[in-house]
Image 1 (cartoon, protein in one colour):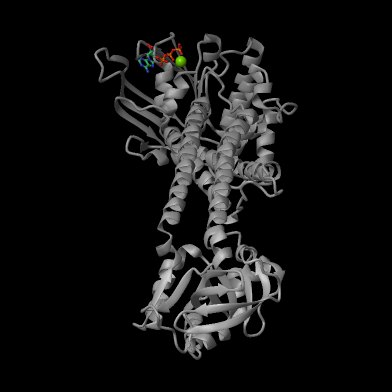
Image 2: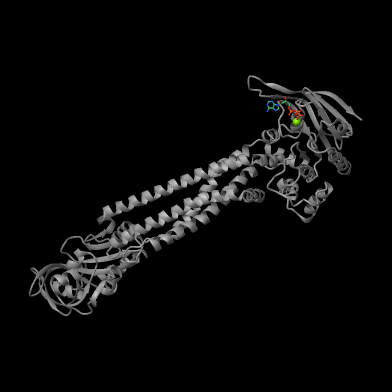
Length: 386
Length: 230
Ligand SMILES: Nc1ncnc2c1ncn2[C@@H]1O[C@H](COP(=O)(O)OP(=O)(O)OP(=O)(O)O)[C@@H](O)[C@H]1O
Ligand SMILES: [Mg+2]
């Protein structure tokens, strides 16, 4: 091993330009991988984040509409025990109705939350543009669009009317902006108690909402939650089931990213193996001499395997540096009007390590053919063709 | 004297499976005694190199057997042959064949490194001693491509001696050297032959040199034409 390695090292250092060119070839492949990979996962992450980052990813509801979940506090404890991948569990009461003041009446969805929990899902505090979140009963926060449509101001009183149930009055304590017109126009936020009182449902809730660590595992986790709760009165929904289109879009991206990476790798492998095949020809005289002196076929082939390995490692290191440099340049120069990068890159070091590892493996595999050639080279052929 | 090398009924046919097979060696029976100094002469194309390559297990005869140290080599595995060459045979080729990526000293050490034993101080000292012996103390750290033809040839000689082989096979080792250097090198080989009891088989076209050997074998058209032992 040491013998083959030291010969390989010497062969590479004695042809520095050639070595550098091959390493650069590999490096370009790796840097493209790192860059494209970071770009695509950046795109996906921002898309996923925008779509489901601030919403419930798994939701437990009553199986029949109009029913509520009792003993929700116990159920939350059970759910929290299912998996550490479930990061946030938050109860909510939903009730649609009309928000009414002297001038207008708007259809709304009142959402009652335990803000200490729900804030982790929805980041209300960051979305508040005026005022504060509700702290006591009958305080409400409105979306900016609704707030403007109804021409309200803070501390105004509005009526919330629910047909067949009753009416209660709210004090406007804050205004939020979710950047989504439909939510801004319809959601009004209050605490659990307020809606529970209005609906006279005691300590029951409409749904239990969750966020999970890996959003793509939501479907499996939802299933686990369902089997753990084992309650036929409840159903468990998840974002994947509700957003099939988004998911297939993401998968399409992943596949195209994978295809790009495979093709880059294939061209790297072909490049390296053809260059190494030429080096075997270049070095056939040396291999012949070494064999005459008694080097084993195995060691003669190891020389080229090591060449591939060294070139792979060199190329991978250079490639990762180039790739990160390229990503850095992209995030610095390709910025939108708001000063943020057009596409936020996602630098995943696991993925980068994988790309580098694949490049090293590919370079080594690419050197198998030349290694075989070297092993098969007959001494007499070389000695005779001086 | 025991026989260190023996050829029995060696035939060599090139292109056996083609339409124009050419037989180069015909029923060669030949044996060499330990620590003898032998020369092989003959016209160009008579089959000398072919014979030497078969003796050194670099090439295989079409039929017949090669015995080294009384051991039949045709049944040996490739790795066993590699070991045999590494330990018992030193080669000096007509075209010196150094590794251009390595220095003179590294080239001399290479047969030892191939044996995968650790390079000790003694081993290094021995390599340096051999380079001194062939008069290369000043250029031993030069890359082999940065040496003259004669220096390269002498490096190749030092290299062939590195593993203290019992047999040295040389194919016109002084083919491209001037007569003074040629003379020096033969003196050197003779000295080594006396000192280490190394068996030498040397191809040469220089009759003057050949006559200094203990035994002269002349090959003609693939057959032994003359075999004179002094
Ligand atoms: N691979 C081969 N295929 C066919 N014929 C070959 C091959 N190698 C050698 N020969 C022939 O075998 C004969 C002997 O060649 P060899 O190299 O042994 O001669 P030689 O005595 O060493 O000659 P020189 O003194 O020129 O080196 C020559 O006629 C040569 O053409
Ligand atoms: Mg010849």
